[in-house]
Image (cartoon, rainbow, N blue to C red):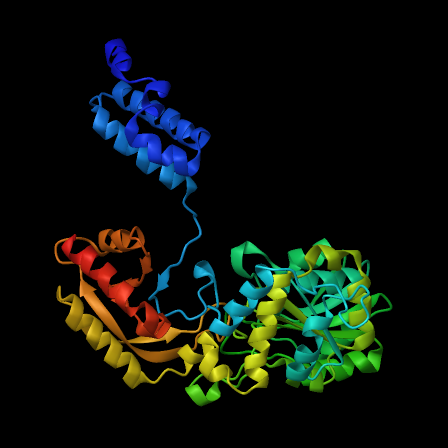
Length: 455
């Protein structure tokens, strides 16, 4: 074994090889040197475990693979063929072309982020979104922070710290990543007061819980689950007037932030910010990267005096949006103002996609890849904590594993140049055109062919 170790070339010897010269020129000597050390260490462990000694050519090829893998970005484009439109694990809402361009414009240059071009004095980053957000929500004033949990944390910290917030026990939800509404409330310093039961809460329960130390009544939309059967809940149309009558705040966490009515597409109604504010809610919270279809953001809309207080709070600086997110959210909101969201915002384009178009694309995929691919009926899900239990009819390309497991085929697709993520059903891999941008069709077909044939 000692002789085997001695047969391995030294770090310096490998660095002087012609084969690594290009990598050194492109990526720098230190980066390549670290890759050489890591590869030699891996080979020593291989020898200890009884493995063969690598040839010089094999070793150099392994070092080259390792060095380029070390600088390759881990965050990359993925083709989402799962049929889940707002897929949390795959980055939630894809952005419109106009949104991406707006983000690129301010990202590649300086901008008037906090500079008033007219007066030449310092400006506010909140001003760039104010007019559009007021227009689409009907609020007196608005602001945006980096996600919806941050929006809730800021409001509770600034307005309810050390005081009570009354919420239905059935609305103490857990959102993505294991974060729970009670934990966010506790972090803010507000004291949680639960009322009602898991399945039934009445207006009288809220009323009885209000005390001298109550700061707010809160509703949290059950955006990622549904309780059916023997249930009762209090609408914001009832809760907001009660809060106003008793001199406390009303807050409504809507979660997904729906600005269009999904019912014409066979989906259930989703609470909308404008309706909540019209009912008299003091503050409404919702996400920017779910049904809104924009970059990650948490939007707060409501009373002007309360928004002014939130903007002045120290947490606002820690949770604020960066310039590219502001530009992207602005461009996304413009789609709604212009009445073109159904055509330009990918989330809504997917929701409204005709079944005939989906069937046509699935059939084309099947004919071009071969390998026993065929088209079957299926359902698409909105996902992302939006419209729980709701689905849209779709048509799926289904590929039999053919001597391999569906897990193996799925793993090969994820390891490709452009990773493809589908879903497995009855040991067949299935792919939904609804969540695949038509511009990705050729890349998908190529990836499927390679996974099926091996070349």
